[in-house]
Image (tube, rainbow, N blue to C red; front, side, top):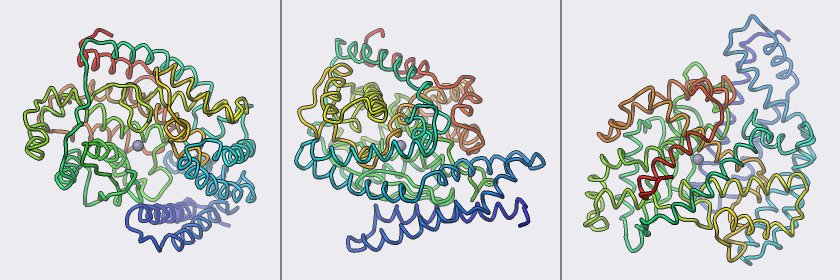
Length: 499
Ligand code: ZN
């Protein structure tokens, strides 16, 4: 076989095309697929995923990759492409086919058991399926290989390069800083009520507003679109075809923040360099870095005072009845209400990471086989009390609330917190580089942030691991310093306390 970069590139492009089609079929499944098409779609997806796997583990691809990774005559980008694909391929090769099948089966059983357990509001209904899934994940971690910490091998699938030994102290310190911060805000003289109680926001007007925001932030609606789904998500088939979804509820304005969130993901997908299209470099290096982009737009921009200085008048025009007599101050405080709550996806940006640390600590114990499953609900409740001072009244509002464990996704949760920490550090770097950033927001100019992110984060693609990229851009790696400073300054002012 002749070994040339062109022949390797053709294989990379084929894999990306197949991956794009898997994404498209999945997007359609969550948006427009008629109910009777569900079974045929499951077959189609399984066939195309099988093809992807077959092409990926093809020994000839392995030979081409080994040649390219070791070839010092190749330029940096082609060698980086080969490195990234080698990483993916080696993990795929290491898991025996029987285990892949057992995992797929455990996932669908896990999902069924989890739904039934939620219906009956009893964790014990889900417990056997979770036990089976955990056993298989430990087996999978061993197949990947690790230095005695199985969780590392699973985390690697979402956050390449991150390790428990690096993550635990950072998240532990974050937890120890957040617990007193939440308590101080609870004790503050200023009380913030539920702004949305009793208000109704027309869904058509919300839809129009979300599209306006996406356009203003620089999301190219000719290289992407927004639709509706039950759970908002984003899916990039290719940088010229990025699909976002949102979910509109008339009793709240969550759709606006969820469009900003998915729009942040979408800008990342649209911002990959043209030179990397259809190659492994047109990818984020980690889930955490991807999440940093969504959380930045949703929270640091979209819940900020400068942003609403510009958009609040337009919002009042769009919802004249719901916002009658409401001023900017009241609204801005209302969308930044801090309150310990049971459900992660509804949590504010101060309490949110405590929900994540709770899950991370429990996952780590479970993967290490250091916590008997029947004790999981009580371990959950104990941490909820210690971290947030509240107790779940039942399993559905506690240990059964997220779908992740039903899918066997152990190692995914910490990427949410990594996203928040990276977002704060990158945002601070953007402010240093563009001192007029927030003045611009107050005039509705959001694109300077998009442009800065495009140059320093998006266009880099997967040239280097996430933390290395962050270090290059901000001067430091993973840290909670910027995030905590941001929270203290913002919420100290909002709640009238010094933190
Ligand atoms: Zn996200």
